Image (cartoon, rainbow, N blue to C red; front, side):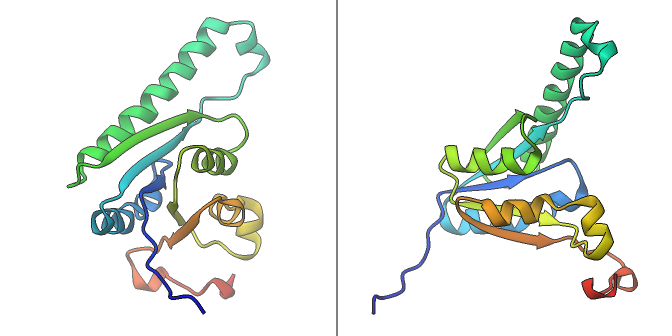
Length: 165
C-alpha cells in the first residue's frame, strides 16, 4: 500500500454570478490558496440578453448589449479582486455559449484548474427541480476536485434541513 501524500493545488477557480451566495465561496478558496501558494482564478460567465427577432434586425444594438455585459462582468470581478488581501488573483470571464455549468467545466479542463470552489443554494425537492443546480452539474462533470460551499442565511431561524422541502 502506498503512502498517502498531501494534495497540492496550483490553480483554484471560483465561479461567481454576482450574488452574495456565490461570494461565500471566495473566503474558503482564499484560505486554501494562501495556505498552498496557489493562484486564485475568479471566473464569471457573462450573460447578455438572448437574441430576439427584433435584436437580429438591429445587430449594432445587440453588439452593444453584449459588450456591456462583458464590461459588467470584468468590472464586477475587478471589484471582488480589489477586496482580497492576496496577490495571486486573476480574473476571467467568458460569454455564455453552452450553459453556465458547461462553461465552468470547459474552462477548468482547458486552463489547468485543479480545484473549483463554488457555492450552492442547497435547494432540494421541487425547488431543485425547477431552479436546477449549476453546482450539481459541475460536481458531476468537473475534471478536477470540487468543493461546494452551501449558502446559509444569516438568520438561524430561516435555516431548515434540506429534507423538509
